[in-house]
Every structure is written in structure tokens, then in C-alpha cells.
Image 1 (cartoon, rainbow, N blue to C red):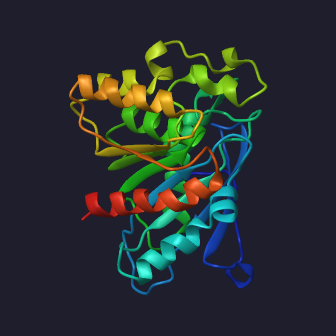
Image 2: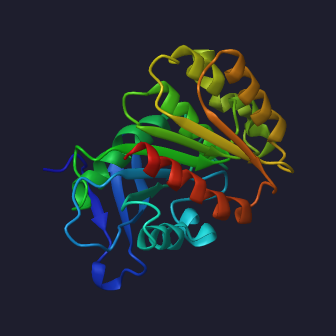
Image 3: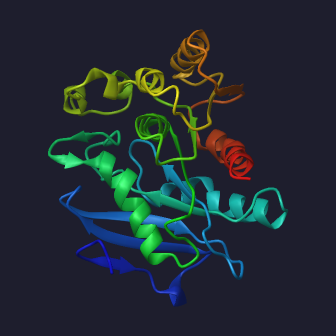
Length: 266
């Protein structure tokens, strides 16, 4: 029994590199949403963890795979025994403007699309997953904001969180998008701010990490988040590496996220 009015799934005969594509119709988007899924090619898998990877501005469901090659990275790490098999679910953000910020606004619930629809669509259509599959979420830039914010807001859903080069508050979206930042306004200001949500739910948070390149335009925002978390004694891992706000950085450091999730799902 499917949750969705319509579901289109790619034909395995034409798939490549273990990537599957699906398009589902959901009331949360008032239309269709795309998900690219890496399915590990091993036998007898069941209840495999589902890792949601959120993209940044300008991108869509294809971009983690085809600008960072994350499916090749993950498969190699699995084959080398560095991580256990995991499914990577890479959804679009809903394709609003330059980026939806994964917030509910403009009459659409881009938040529920990620926290509800994406997980459900994967469980319904990817045989090695189930309702008991543990869920983790990560992202880059706007997607890092989405991952940390949604994980902090819904700590009961996710077992682990990770952000790369993350926006930390809605008020940084103007650095990237041409749309009016007021479109992203939430009724409750806490819902716009990663730190405030982490603080609000600090007794229930799953393990989380975030990192940023030392030459990234968001480095000071990430350092500030780290310092505020330290001051509040909220346990987390923060790392800085060489690099800028660019795909070569994310291609390299997604490895840190996959290792982190593997360690907490042991």
C-alpha cells in the first residue's frame, strides 16, 4: 500500500552505478518531488540505514551524485570495510526559487517533504530498507542548514546529523538567493535558527557534527555556532579543514559524515 497518489520509479534495466530515481506526488509540495537513491549492491541486505543528503542552493536531486560522486565514494568505503552498507537518499529541495531552505513557506511544506515523504518513499520502494531502518541526515550549505535544523527540531526522527559549510540561520540565505529573504520567515523565530533549536531540544539531541572550510564565506557563522554550543555545554563535534565553499571540499569531507554515521549506528 503506497502513501502517494503517484510514484514513478526508474527501470533497473537502464540504471547505472546503483543509482535509482523516483518521482512522487505529495500534498506537501502541491505537486511532484524527485529523489535520487544510491542502493548498495550487496546481497541479503535488510533494514539498511537511510542517509538523507540535502543539497545546497541552485541544485537538485542529481547534484550530490553528479558533482561530488558520493555514490562512488560510499561504495568504495563499503567495499574497503570502512563503513557498513547504507542507502543514500538525495532529494530535491522542492525547487522553489534558488532554494527552499527546507522550511515551510509560500504555501508548501518543504520541511515535511524531507522529514516525512522522502523517508516513506524510500521505505516503500527500496527493498533493503524498512520502517526499522535507522535514519540520519546531512547536507551542504543550505542543505547543512536543513540537516542541522530539521535534526534539532525532530530529534526523535534522526539518529545522527551532519552539516558541511552550513548556513546557520535563515538570515544568511540572502548571501546566495535572489528571492526576498522574508519569504522564509517563520512564525516562531526559533524555527529559523539552528542554535536556538539545538538549545531548545538539547536534552534529546542525537549525536551531531559539522565542519567548514577555513576559506569559506560561512566560516565565521560556523565558528560562532560552535562557540555558542560550547558555552551551553551542548555536546557536538566541530572541525575546520582547508578549503572554500566548493564541490571539491564537499566531495572530500562527505567521507567524514559517512564515517560518523557508521560509528553511531554500530
